[in-house]
Amino acid sequence: MKVGNHVGFAAEILRKGGLVSIPTETVYGLAADATNPDAVAAIFKVKKRPSFDPLIIHVSDFESAKKYTSHIDPRAKLLADHFWPGPLTLVLPKKDSIPDIVSAGLTTVGVRVPNHPITLDLLRSVDFPLAAPSANLFGYVSPTRPQHVASQLGESIDYILDGGPCAIGVESTILGFENDSPVIYRRGGIEISAIEDLIGPVKVNEHSNSNPQAPGMLSSHYSPFKKLVGEPYDQTVKAFPNLKVGALRFSNKLPSCPENWQLVLSESGNLLEAAYHLFEYLRKIDELEPDLFVVEFVPDIGIGQAINDRLRRATASNH
Ligand code: AMP
Ligand code: MG
Image 1 (cartoon, rainbow, N blue to C red):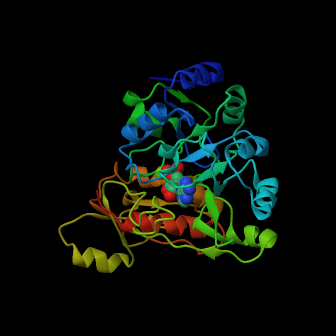
Image 2 (spheres, rainbow, N blue to C red):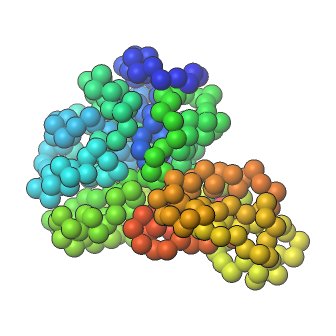
């Protein structure tokens, strides 16, 4: 495995059916030629991702999105015009050129144009879309730096395209249509209110383990190997007298917890900064001394809703 910024080299590997980790503004992806079922199968294998969890395809612009989908709702077009390139995935009816393995057997496929210059270059230099889930082992925290990818998947992939740290740090917002009505399948980098400003009210389909429309949205996800629990801190310390209890905080430290057992997402209380640090700090949790971490949720507005969604799912799960 190599790390570098050679778009031509990355394109060559992808043409041969190999795997390349790509930078985006949300998180690092694990990409393969979406039209090559064997290459896509390798993504599932390397990530240990269950085959019922569909992948998103990445394209360079709206015209290429049209090539791989059979119908684009006018509201989807409006959103694409407004937010692409950017952290919005549109779930649309797929054409047969996208193999069933990509969509986990669904008749729809998630499509987006990522907003990262190197990856846009790469997408323009190949003549196929890239299927790419986040470049982490299934269920673990998404990677926001090339080193995160290297440490977890480095041995099993061909190349990491280094585009620096991801600017946004949480995944894309996913929107589809059910009975002609817009539905949010995942909260993410685009605020729901910004979507509603353009197309009117949208329904938010909260994650469950049994929703067949969104098979990947498992309630436990995004979790480090250590246990995370919700507040309050002091009560948790009392409940686990033999454990060291750390804290993942929004903007300030707790007086009752040792300083170096705490991680603060944004000292200035800025939600964008908190999103940028979120996955990096969830990974740090596994390196710090405490056995257990108490998580403080962030204000539930704007991108804070996407952050809280990831925090809730991280506290719901243990490996
Ligand atoms: P990841 O790239 O790891 O964030 O995973 C992509 C997510 O997109 C998965 O969790 C899927 O549930 C969701 N997704 C992809 N395609 C579809 C689709 N056709 N319908 C509903 N959800 C989808
Ligand atoms: Mg993922």
